[in-house]
Amino acid sequence: MSLPRLGALVAVLTFLADQAVKAWVLYVFRLQDRPPVRVAPLFELVLVWNRGISYGLFQQHEDWGRYGLVAVSVVASVGLAIWLRRARHWALAVALGLLIGGALGNALDRVLYGAVADFVLLYWIPVFPYVFNVGDSAIVAGVALILYDSLVVEPKARPSSPEGMSSADREPMA
Image 1 (spheres, one colour):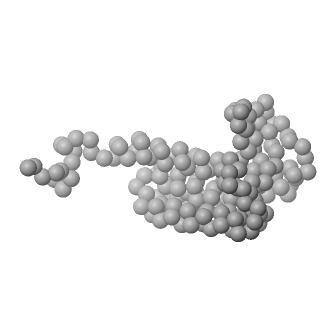
Image 2: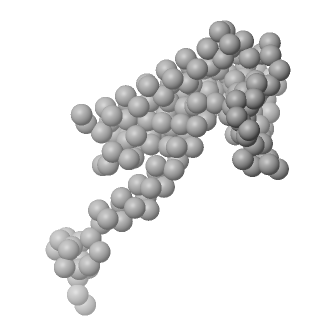
């Protein structure tokens, strides 16, 4: 499978998983009708409608702000898809697919509901509890994989000594 196809597959699977879990949380489990549900000592399910971006920053209560965030997500996804076409390693292809799928899943929430449905609350950061969803998790994993690709994969792919460089890569001697 080509790397762009791998990334596209990851994007589609991420988008579908994000939307399927949100549909289950909203329409089957009906989390909006329940108090917070403790799953484990540091893990609760609680529904929060995020009208902003990450960590609830830049809350948008008007339609123009909501659709502005949708537009930013779509434009970013198009840019990531262009980058995906140039991916040279599986880690970058998967990372970009995770980012695209997560961004588009959250964008669809903004279109359908006016806000992003967040429902996973972890208390592992006691002073700053963060409520998130599957799409948010995919975005964080995608960023981590891009860092891995940039810091581990790419340096290994570059020649480290003049002996490993082609004549076109060497600077001319003065």
